[in-house]
Image (cartoon, rainbow, N blue to C red):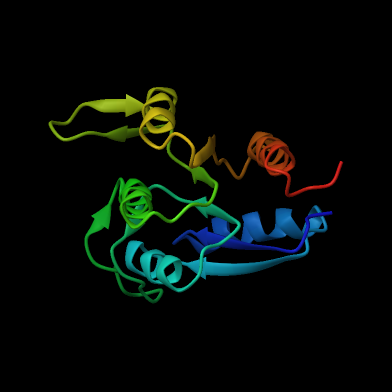
Length: 158
């Protein structure tokens, strides 16, 4: 069972957020989940309290939005902006990136696959980034990998 921990779940898509929360319940995790749906709300949450773990989407809107609002300019690498803020502000907690994308477009139009980005991010955010997972609601691989990551981080009992 997960030891009492605070998890900051940064995810703008309700179905994905609910899927992750459901997994935490299935694992019988005893956690306080703090939710953020945008870059700005994640930064606000981090300024108020440092979580024991952050589950972070990479593609996020700038601001929280209702179901019929767009939340401002979408940021394909909004999660990286949050990680850079953490480094600058010396906020330290383990982070797991959970993204539904298999690749991202860089400036100039080139596409970089998730494995290449994983390697870049693990170097850039060494010591903070625990893992980078590909989320796909159809397959359970992300659940297995996230469960193993939680165990590795010492947040799940054997």
